[in-house]
Length: 204
Ligand SMILES: [Fe+2]
Ligand SMILES: [Fe+2]
Image (tube, rainbow, N blue to C red; front, side):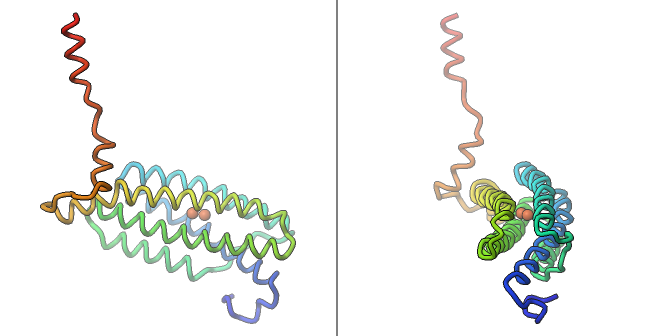
């Protein structure tokens, strides 16, 4: 069923279509995440994907609760938008060899998925509220909060870790100039304990 076919006659039809669409999307995302985990060599990114895979299982469970409250069978409706986003991510992964560039590409591909989910949950919350089905809104809000948190973590990774590394691999001779690029190096540098150790030796 497409968004603009005449199967959708009312706001309630649109809401049910959106729910089935997102149920399909969450299930497809769960299938795609293990491949992204496998390709991620950045430990933080990999851990983030693993965490979000577990969260996505919980999200699917919440969507099943929504179907139950609506007295409808949990059913997915093929969504060309998420299929396209995930296909693009797979294509991108098959085109990249460099590990650092792969991590950067994975962050961007994952953020495309999160932004898709954020818009869809936002619409479902608005439609459920308008239809007077406030009982299902908390489940959507819980999922939306996880998608937003994941998106924010991905942005932080892109800014502080993953992107500067890839840029370094691409342009090895270019000196780092911005404070932002220097920050992660300083943050990961081990704490120097040489001076206190010397003093301790003198006292002894
Ligand atoms: Fe999700
Ligand atoms: Fe997500």
